[in-house]
Image (tube, rainbow, N blue to C red; front, side):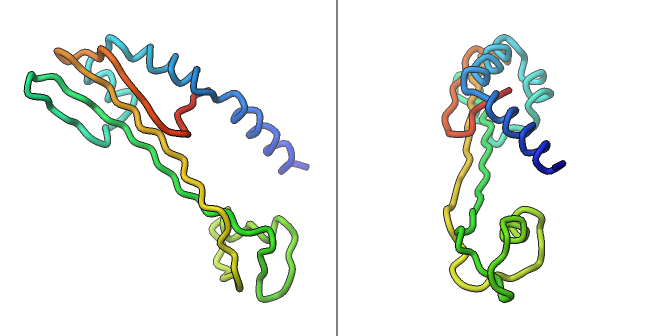
Length: 133
């Protein structure tokens, strides 16, 4: 029962995360200094200094996941769903037999902030994981 409640809470939080809310988050960054941006977002993945002295700070998030096939087998035979996904979700040390590699999913978000005179003046983003709650 406890797992079900955690699942429902996670589902509700994920359902609330949208690209529109991500854009609202980015709008709030406009007008901040480079130091304030780094304080709230952390170290950028890349900093590009332009010839006119302006900068582009890039933040990249990428997460690859492999979901096993539903027909996943272990050497002991068929397993229930909890056992089937255990080595992939909880870091177990079981070694599965057969064709267990299913769908490869990549969550990706790249956000770029344009700074003129050390102030964020604009931004852009791309990717399927650019969402906020």
